[in-house]
Amino acid sequence: MTFAQSTARSGRVAGLLAALIGALLVIGLLSPPGAGAAPSERTLKVATYNIHHAQGADGLLDLERVARVLEDSGAEVIALQEVDRFWGERSGYVDQAEWLGRRLGMDMVYGKNLQADPAAPGLPDAQYGTAILSKYPIRDWSNTALPKFPAGEQRGLLQADIKVRGVSVRVLGTHLQHNNSDERLAQIDAILGITSADPRPTVLLGDMNAEPDSAEHAKLSTEYTDAWQAVGIGPGYTFDADDPKGRIDYVFTRGGATPRAATVPSTLASDHLPVVVDLVLPHPSGK
Image 1: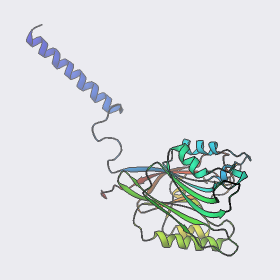
Image 2: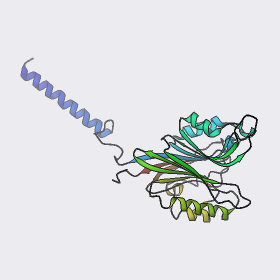
Image 3: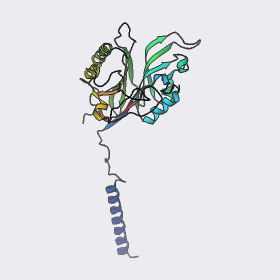
Image 4: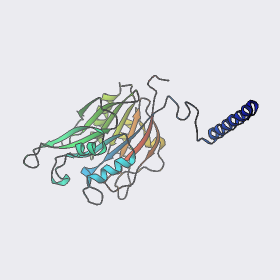
C-alpha cells in the first residue's frame, strides 16, 4: 500500500468514525461533555411514612416489610412517625429507629415525644416518637416539643440538617395532634415560628392529621408548598391504607426546594401509605 493509499484509507476511517459518533449523539447513546441534567440541578428524593409501629393494615407486625417499602421507594431522606423504641410487646421490644437505620444503611436521629418505664427488665426506658433517616450525613439535629393541650398527647418537631452536593437542606419531621384542630393550629404556629426566618431549602414531612381543605393546611400553605398539590396526580389519599379515602400525610417545601414528582405507593405495611416526592434544589452558588 502506497503512502497516498494509506492516507486516503485513514481519511475514510476517520470519516466513518465521525459519522458514527454523530449518529450516536443524535439518538442519545452518547452525550457531549456537560450534556444531560443541567449542571446547576441538585435533586433529592424524600418520603414521609407513618409506620404505626410496623403493624400493618392486615394486623401483621413486620418491620422488615416496612424496610422494603422504604428501600423500594428510593428515598434518600425519610421522615417516620409512630416509631417505637423498646416500647413493649406490640412492637417486639425493638428499637425500631435504630433497626431501620442499620437495615437501610442510613444516618438516623430520633425524636422522643413519649417516655415510660422499661417495658421489661434489662431494657432501657420505653420511648415513642418520630425519626429521620438520611443517606447523607446528618450534621446537626434537635427535637422541639410542640404545644400540648391538657387532654392532648405530646408532639414534637424533629429537625435535621444535611448537605446535598453542597446545598444545605433543613429536614423537618412531625406528627400533629389527631383529634383537636385548635391544638394542631397551635402546633403549626410553633412550627412556623421556628422555621420562618431560615432561608435554606426546607422540607417539612409528616402526618398532619388534617385534610387539604382544613384551616391547618391553609395556615401551613402561607409559607410552604404542598408538594402533592403542586405535582401529584389524583387524590393522593394516604389513610386508611386498605381503603384510602383521606389525605393527611404531606411533604411541604419552601426556600427553593421545588417538587418535581410525587407518588403514593400502595402497601399494607402500615395503616397509612407513604408519600414519596422528587425535589430539585437550588445550586449552592445561586446560579
